[in-house]
Image (cartoon, rainbow, N blue to C red; front, side, top):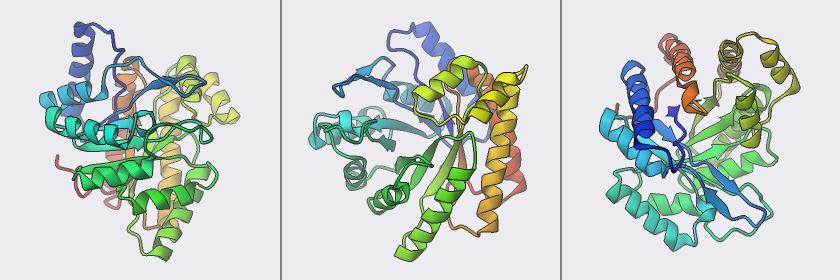
Length: 297
């Protein structure tokens, strides 16, 4: 997957066209199965969302029309007014935008009472509405994460995208525990898209922290000490990916693995393409790293 953040809501048509054109060129050059469009929302203390970016469906529709690449859009389900509102949104997304792949996301505050349905409820609703792909988020290192993943898998989630990964230890532990739990319950494990992002400057690190990504001090120091931070972040991503894949092979884990490359912003798209190139070469070397069996490209 290539994850592309939507431009600001009030961006010019010229800028949106430039973003779509840049993405289109990458998708034509690289073996990418899906374009993944995240929903970036600011939330106040009352749990009210502020949508500052272009509708994810509008960008997804443009990319799909221009490239033929299947798309998935992210939706923070708890901000919807009700379960019925989400059902109407799903129907509109499928019929008017031609998008039937989703990544459902929960709220940032587990103790807050949001109005909309939970991720598990959204999964069931999407399955009932015959959505093609149903995905959720996995956060390595979060307490009780395995139990969350199992509940999401039972409710119809077929793939997870992780938070951006800057180290391997927590992900290895999570994959091991999830694989064992699925085996114990007779569940088919969902595919894990391991997420990585190029980090070109300090702002990228600050943005990752704002998104809730854990940035280890040693990783931050390593990146900031390097003259070409972007290039070093590619090395870090590949090292982390390799450590996770090696551990999965060693432990003979049942969880299918793939990659989600997040560009974070338009200015990082060239580095995101370099990262995609690194991972695509690894996929060619190791046939065990399968692209999704339901990929259509």
